[in-house]
Amino acid sequence: SLYMRALTDLARLLAAAVLLTAFVVVSGGWGRDGHSIIAQIAWEQLSDEAKAEIEALLGQSSLPEISSWADVVRREPAYQWSGPLHYVNMPPDAADYDPARDCPPEGNVVSAIDRFAAELKDRTLPAKERGEALMFLVHFVGDLHQPLHGGRAEDRGGYSIELTFYDKEMNLHG
Image (cartoon, rainbow, N blue to C red; front, side, top):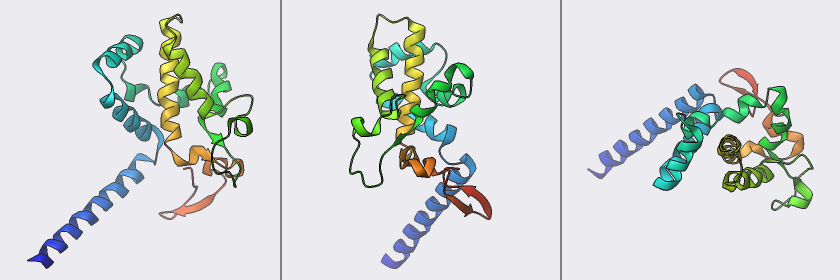
C-alpha cells in the first residue's frame, strides 16, 4: 500500500540520517576525512592525462593521501608562513569577496589557490616545487569547501564560538 511504502521510505531516510550523523561524529567533522573526500571527488573528475601528470609529481602518493599535508607542515617552523593561507576573513556585512579589502599582505586561502595553481602550471619550476604546489592546492581547495574557513575574523573560524555537542564542551570549529 501507499502508506507502507511511505513508512519504508521514511525508515530508509532516518537510517541514512543516523549513518550520516555517526560518520560526522566518528570522523571528527571535516579534518582528514573531509579533505580526503574532496580530493577523491576531484581525482574522479580528472582526465587520464591530468592523472598521469599528478602521479608523476606525487610518486606513490594519491591525492586523498596528501590532502591534509598542509595542515601537518604548517606546524613546522619552515612552513609557519602558511598558517593564514587556510582561511579567508570578510566583514560581517560583505556580500562577496573583495581581494582589495579581504586579502591581507600575507595572503589567504583564495590568493593561495591562485598562487599554487600558477606554480603547478609553471613547467619551468622543478618537479619537487610543483609537487608541493599541488599538495597545497589540493588542501586549500578542501579548506575552501569547509564553511568555517570563510567568515568573520572575530569568529576565528568557529574557535571563538563555544557549544555543547553530545554533552561535550567544545568550540564550533571542533
